[in-house]
Length: 355
Ligand code: ATP
Image (tube, rainbow, N blue to C red; front, side, top):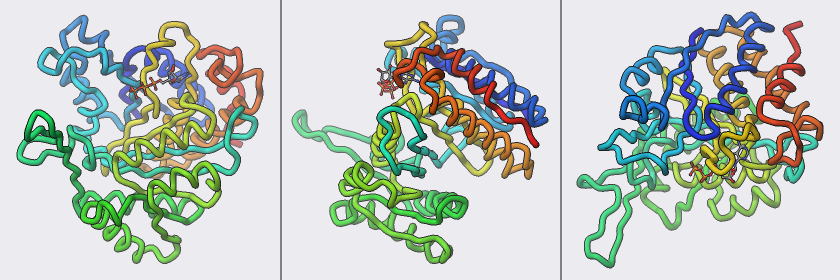
């Protein structure tokens, strides 16, 4: 199977390189026959050809079986009119990646990991409170007077239903529990519609337990009793905020994994940003993008009925667990001394080949 690899900016190329090392090793050990093409994007591309994302790269991503996407340092980009295109946003739209899957698990031995946390946030990715995704009369935000600013939140039945379906399917593969998170009594129409569709989907999955919790209560519960939860289903911005909280509770941003999924395509992204403050020093923690790549392999295995892909994903996750559980193979953000490439080598050394 062929992957399109877009390394991104700042720490992007460093952590993506580490993930590619792990993917190569697992491909050999499990007979996956993985191939990949690396496509330059971001400021490196802009300096050469005046755009951060050439249309050919988008096409290559569309043709590939899966995408590995490093973080983009968009705050440093020129305006879109000068070629500073939003890479993850364009890929998400072009490939219709409507679901953002963000796991957070406290792995044994990780310093500061909050006990009992093992959740998957299923976040709607295409609408909600995001000015670039939600337009009303041509605007996502607008100022009717110089002293009043308004923001639009869009929720549709179709988008809510398709994300709810993903959440129930994921829960059936996990601990069988979906909690939808919002603020229905305040955002009565938008969250009301989102929950209506979640309830309709819940009725089709009697084997999955379903409940609803307010987002403010969830913020507290993730801290005080995270073991109550399995899959959290939520709208775009709540999902963004809760997933950063959850991953911080699991030990830190460097552990943040994410898979963006649509009906036909999937892209593994790190769940953190491009960390310009530590770029170029080889010290970034590549765990997030390595775990995202494992999620991509599992998705490919299910889509193409290739069991060995699921086994490879599990092997990566176990190897990462082993490395993170050992103070000698942790990166600096987790109190260790190993560098980015060293962590990837340690993961490869811990991969168990297929029995
Ligand atoms: P964005 O706005 O692109 O989401 P951000 O401003 O929220 O990004 P990040 O780039 O994610 O921030 O970085 C936040 C902090 O976490 C920084 O201090 C950064 O160095 C640290 N950090 C992020 N990712 C990693 C990583 N993989 N390894 C080590 N530290 C990281």
